[in-house]
Length: 308
Image (tube, rainbow, N blue to C red; front, side, top):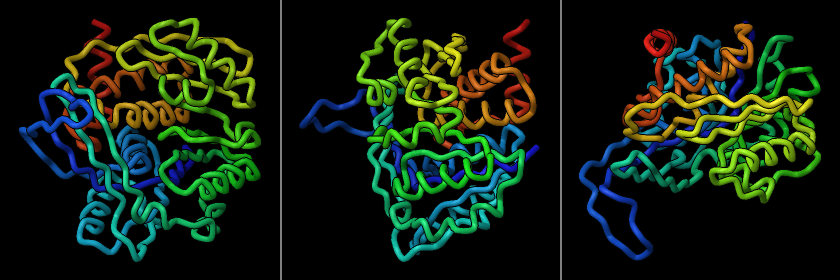
């Protein structure tokens, strides 16, 4: 199985647990506050590694006292961090607010993530072979994300893109993306199609993204499941597994990492989606980001219990 190269963010998460998300101007009391390792790049790298992938993370950390501990934490999941750079900056931070239903709001400060440059990625091709995969998101400078996608396509490497947080994407970039995995709000941002609970609108949004040049699209719908569509506009809906939701942080990241590894291992799209849905269900039933991500044995046991 080839290398999964993740070019993305590494953050320190400051997580506040509250009874309900506040209204504008409202002050609410947090009943618990924790610091945890996060960042979409790091989370997705950990999820892929725990699912059995061979993962290399490229990103940046700072010169503060958080960075060394976070890098050590990522390494313990068997993620190769040799290409993580040290920058003269504070580490990226995320301020996460989680309510009693498990829903969250996230506020980002890019820190060292914003210091990553195209020059830092010049050795990217050394990590690619014919069976490699590239995975990128939107929490590092756009020039770096675009360069990584262009470089991967030049080498014939399969590309995955999670456009989160949502931001403008140049039209010429869409054909560089083999698989785009995004949630409802990100799909609405790209297509201007209001999805809500209307599955026909989800299909319409996926079709519009395909028309932009993306080969495969997966729109995750939280507790409603996910919709997959390929460039032939063949669609597949996968239900979510019902669980008690504790914290939705990193649920999407878990889904993405698990799906990529399943496909690399030769699973069908249908089986890979079921495995990714199971991994994400386990993650939302636990608190935290990387701490909530299940390993391959936990995913297999969950699927076995659900099939009996």
